[in-house]
Image (tube, each protein chain N blue to C red):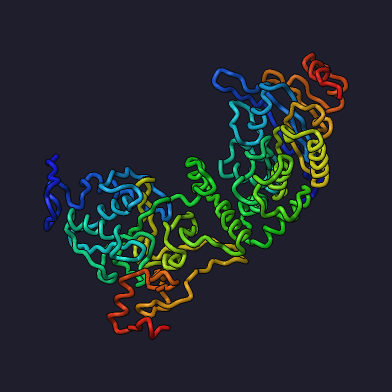
Length: 299
Length: 263
């Protein structure tokens, strides 16, 4: 092994003493093999030897390991957290890969070849030459009702998924409608029930037959799973309570979009609120394209 | 289905079922036939192998030797332990039911009574909320739980109600064979009496076959048509319930019957 040089600052290509994109080549090969298996069995959770990363579990270690394994020197990386490019998690991960891999960074969805995301799918439709990497805290959709791992594996193997509907039933019985609003369970390719990571259910329809490859990494739980391009992804529901998406009844206060998923921002202590697109890149592109509508005009 | 044809064959055929835990004996060489609509009681003291036998019969615990053959509705005889695990688990949640001694083992305590009853329907593919809820309401009524408790969690129920809820949850898919492990254990006598009354009515109305494990001779006298008496892992006596209880042949059965305290 080469010696570590912890004092060195940002470098053009990598940090002295570290391999390209931090992980060693054997680890990357192991993760790539896992990804290939995951792609071959859409929605199936494949165990892998998750490594320690230089940040805490729960901050995207699974997604980062996938990104490190697939990113190449000519890739362009975009990292978003809750749709935004400028939040702590996104900035930290982007800087990490900038230092350890030196790959090009972008905030523009259309320019990225690899997009690592936490909790959102970009509003701009993705293409088949892009890869979307999700950070997953809890990969097992059955865990809510079945705490035993041996049992959930068996349930997946035998397609015993009736219990997933117990949770949805419980929602309707209590609230009159399905109130699960994020991490909404989906059936992938008609076979495996999968947790889509905590994206809002607003984003679920985007997963269905998406042209881009979708990879999911759970570092703490040591699981990788995937949805290959153009794979059917169906949100679970009842015949008489079909799946529907929630959207705030507002338009974006900055770009005026009536279609995007909105964040609610409290602006003062007198009940003032601003609704803005959670996808910052989408919002900025729209404003730059001249689709500007300032707040006073919107109201 | 034609009842006459169904009644020609035993529902469950058990041949030489043995189960060892290492060198220790659980149960040995148990054989019997269970016919459609028949209730079989298994009695014996603690440690006599009753629960081991029940678990072997109900597909939960693979026997060390012997076979358990079930006559399915449409596909003929099925050797329970030679069938695939998928088939066996399907059987367990459709044609069979298991009532645990402790309702907490058989219920989901974190979801409502309605979801508990509806789970088996959803497990066999029912995806219509209204229908599931209607079936759950119907079954709560049949086990004498008020309809306004449908959305309460089992944690808010008394022990007797939890046990009745567990029975509703098992019977909702109209099983043909129900296994019960001490269904009245831990309940006080008046609640026991009502539960037994309810079980007797349901078994008769639905034409259920049942295997009931208990150490309570009063329970088997009320419920069971036939009786197996177990001691040290073996069946020591086997016969019609009234015959076994009123004219016990084996010394152990005689001891068991004479040990019951008169009320």
